[in-house]
Image (cartoon, rainbow, N blue to C red; front, side):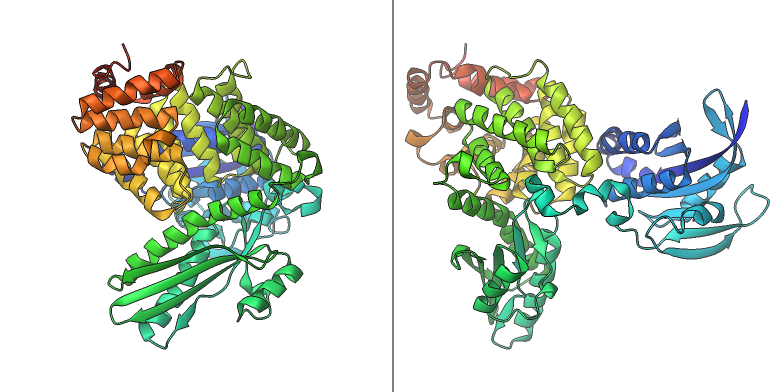
Length: 573
């Protein structure tokens, strides 16, 4: 038995009983994934130790009170609105007996934790005295509190406005861009939408769209959103473009709103400040009924399409430049373009690009993320793997990246795919949900959760998300159209899946398999057999990857339904 001074952190899930009552399996899966990917690594990073788990609660000890508070802040930054925590931190006397820690120091931390707001952190006065000059945060004084089973009142303070710059894990992201070229992101400024005419509805919608788009675009990791307040005035396109060269952003997003009676027309255009030309534009006509629903729909459409439009423009700008003439940031763009081609040779080339980038900057998000995607594509395509244990390597890298980029939806998207490769359905679904929580405006996250729900035997729920992704992003790649068509097959709507896939003569082998499934679902067996025969003649070795992927379904009933349809046209034995 040892008596010592220790920093104690107590954490508890907000509304745990309610969430368990609504969705026990999903709640447990989300908490387990968050514990594995955030809590355990972050506590370890700050030299802490979790000494007790209590269902939805955690107790941890630290040698340093500053480390305990930094850990608490990093923990809360990584949490989502759907899985929130309250945290209490105290510095006090405890007893350590064979690894278990107890005493008044532990009790005070546990008693002040419920005083925190959802997502908040409360400190005892003893803890606050040690950190108040060491962390760049403000505190809200909750005054003295009478705590259960504690003799004397304890003054409690709550962190009022924690910023990411306050904790050490953000130091790298604040580095100068020229020192870390693989972290360079295209910069976009959102100019306030303009209202054509003076209708009150149009003015309200204009303001609402600007606000909701700002919130949505800030969730995207593929570009940096520039505060329009950094410009002295944004009132006309040519002024914005001129300012873009001075301030250093590459794109400006303009929008207009026009209302006539119950109709609204919204125009949006993405303009390159380099060329001065539109990169993407769209005119949307809608009924002006539920204004909030309209704002959400338009925001989802613009935000979801924007990242792909920017990526395509960047790739186009360097398409004629040899690889050895590109800057580090441009090499990453070329690698991502090759990755999207999904063929063996391009995937190998992309793998080399991302390996070099990762070696140069292992803490940057996209080099490691994209490298791991090349291994995932190998696995999904049935190609020989470049690593002995690609799934283990990639999962280790995703855990490492999560500690550096705790709110990255892309990390959880890939992690979900990796767990499905392992046949770990609970973690696969939990990470898919987390990806969608972090960025519900991104079509990739809609597709990730949609396909996860489909593998889980929930095709109707999957179809809602997959249809939304298809409707909100005109850049959806062909591979994801296949998932949507499969959802239509499983929902007994094969007639809706045929138009999604497009012209059969230009389909990939994978998409041709989905078309055959839809034809069987329509009862057009002779036509399905004709396509199956043609597929086997053109691609005699297609089966290993394109058929085995259906084993991703969790339940035998779903697998049997698909394989039975393929057997009926002699596509499988």
